Image 1 (tube, rainbow, N blue to C red):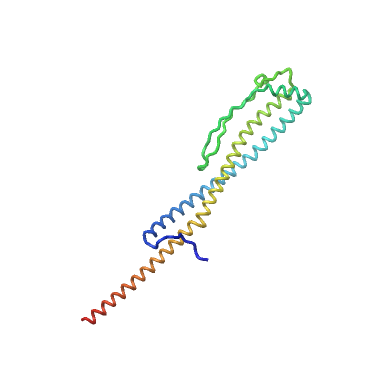
Image 2 (cartoon, rainbow, N blue to C red):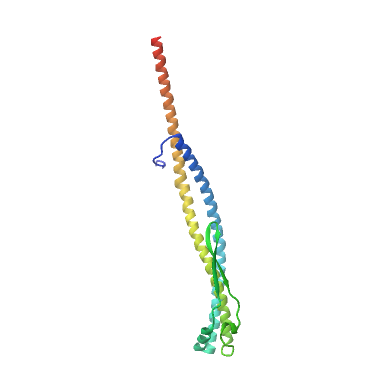
Amino acid sequence: MAQEMIEGINPTRMELLKLKEREKLAVKGHSLLKEKRNALIMEFFNILEKVKGSRENVAKNLEEAYQDLTAAQVSMGDLAVKKAAMAVTESVDVDIDSRSIMGVVVPVVDSETHERTIVERGYGFMDTSVKVDEAAKKFEKSVQLIIELGETEKTIMLLASEIESTKRRVNALEHIIIPRLQNTVKYIEMRLEEMERESFVRLKMVKKSMESEEAVNG
């Protein structure tokens, strides 16, 4: 199969210099993108390990919280538990910022949560079971863990997208752009050499013709 080249290029020394510069930049860009891809993949797997642990923590806390909630419903009744839940005030203040990982902008979620007393939550001590308080504590902790997990999972999604994009650019440079540049450079060099040989032959023929004419006229 014929080697692919860049179309519409004139075989001149000026074009050759331009293509060699483009090839040099493409090779450098390819190297930098490979480094970026490898660094992103390393960061991706580091965070992925963190996510596995976070998901387990969220699942464990939610399971325990629902167990306490079920126990409270059994001892107090559904209506009393719902009444206590309606009395609870909001406790989470979330602020979303961002940071950069190898040029990828990822979220940074800052949430302010603290363990509250029964009075701070809004329901009465005398009207509720201790299991309600235990469930509330665990749900509050779960909310914090879920916020942290959301930040981490969004970061993973963004990194995965950037890794895929970077891989496509690396492959395009490695298998399409750089080979085409190299093939075109070789083609121009060969054409220039051929043109120089043809020019040299013509000059020799002209010189020989002039010498023959001088010999005849002399």
